[in-house]
Amino acid sequence: MTPRTALRDPKQDRSRATRRRLLEAAVACLAERGWAGSTVAVVAERAGVSRGAAQHHFPTREDLFTAAVEHVAEERSAELRALPAPHGEGRVPAVVEALITLYTGPLFRAALQLWVAASYEEQLGARVTALEAKIGRETHRMAVELLGADESVPGVREAVQGLLDLGRGLGLANLLTDDGHRRERVVAQWSRILEGI
Image (cartoon, rainbow, N blue to C red; front, side, top):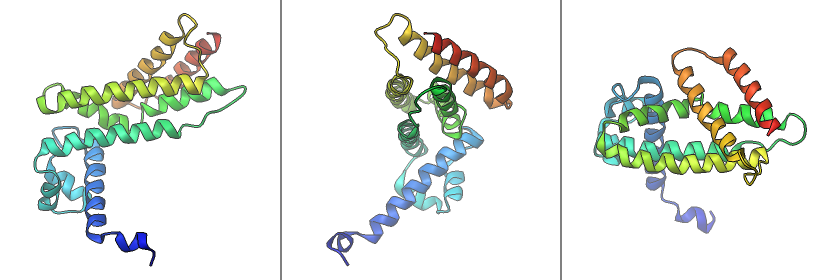
C-alpha cells in the first residue's frame, strides 16, 4: 500500500460517490421529468440511495437542485474543453456541428429545466443567472478558439455570438420534436456564413 492510498478514507470516498450519483440523478430527472417531476424522493430512487441519505447530503430540494446547477455547469464546461480542434478544410462545419450538439443533448435539456425553475424559484434564480453567464463566456471563448476567429474584425464577435444563440434556439426546438433534418440544413448554412466572414 502506498502512502497515498493509506490516507484515503473509504467513508469519504463513498460519500463523494453518493453525492455524485445524486447530482447525476438530479440532472437526469430534470432532463426527463422537468422541475415539477423532479422531487428529492424521485432523485434518491434513481440514484439508488435512501431519501434519508439524499437529505443528509442535500437537506432541501433547493439545496439539491442548486448543487445540480453547479454540476450541470461543470459538465457543460468539461464538454466544451473536450471538443476537438479540427484543422484544414471542413474545420468550420465540424466546429459548428460540435457546438450545436452541445445545445441539443441532455445536459442542455437539464439546464433549460433549471432556467425555467429559476424564473420562479428565488433561491435558484441568482445562482443560475451567475452560472449561465460564466458558461456563456466560456462557450464564447471556446467557440472563438475552435473557429480560429479574429474578433478584431468587425462583425466576427457578433457572428460567433449569433452561432451560440442559434444553438440555444435549435436546442429549444429539439425539446418538442426531433428537429435533426432541419437542423442539418441550418448548420450547413450557418457554416457557410461563418466561412465567408
